[in-house]
Length: 112
Image 1 (tube, rainbow, N blue to C red):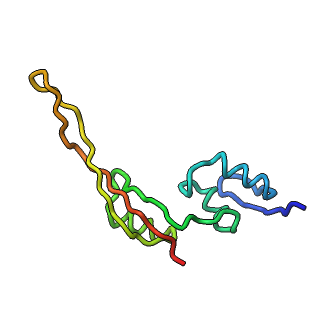
Image 2 (cartoon, helix red, strand yellow; image 1 turned 120 degrees about the vertical axis):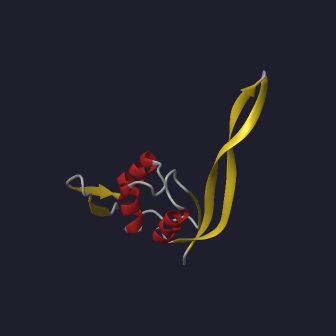
Image 3 (cartoon, rainbow, N blue to C red; image 1 turned 180 degrees about the vertical axis):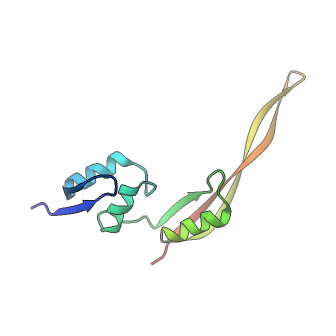
């Protein structure tokens, strides 16, 4: 027997979903916690959180803001990695790779 759960989304009316419908919605979202619907489903226990997650510092975001986002998601950082981003520059017919930016990624574990 399917159990029914009522979810009230801010931008829509109140809907009545079965567990099967909610799991279908999750598979179509594919956003891993970055969208509002996924967090709602996670909050009511339909979706369990991963024990490890990766968080990337978004362009224009400070490292402190990213760490706050990690904490708000219920994780704590365990590793920080930086990857350089290169651009191709052609000088005198030769290709040179020049670092232009960096990508910072935090690995985090779930707070139990």
